Amino acid sequence: MRGLALGLALAVLTAGCGGSAAPSVSATARPIVVSSTYTPAPSATAAVGISIPAASSSANPSAAALLAPTPAPANQVRIQDFSFTPATLTVAVGTRITWTNGGPSNHTVTANDGSFDSGQVLRNASFDFVFSKTGTFAYHCSFHPTMTASVTVS
Image (cartoon, rainbow, N blue to C red; front, side, top):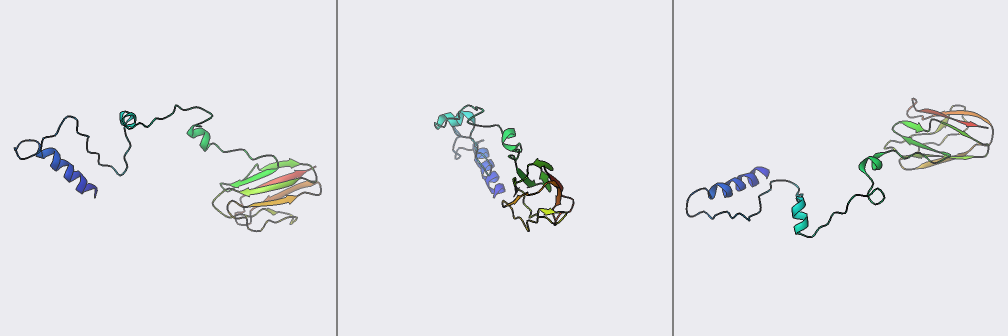
């Protein structure tokens, strides 16, 4: 398809280079663009009445700000990129911790001592657990044993 469009464009351009039967190309003719998408130039956007607002930090955050990871709120652990974030958490007795799987893979939140186990936590799903006694509770993902973290309850 692209070759056909290019061939037609060349035929139109070369037809005006001599011969009286070929139509002439005027100076105001729009250029032929061979592309799968059309992105108008700044002058073209003004001609059709499209305005592009100036960037502001509140209305239009930068691409870097959109890509920056958002820190997890207190008492929440994010499961993503084959890690638990934060890897260590210190809370008081009676605190509810929520683990949220923000990655593309399924995971578990499994205490090394067997005190809690989430079972399979699907993508965008969460697991909650309330810590009712003091101690340090190491945990891991049963599917990915290198994923480890801990909660210290005081």
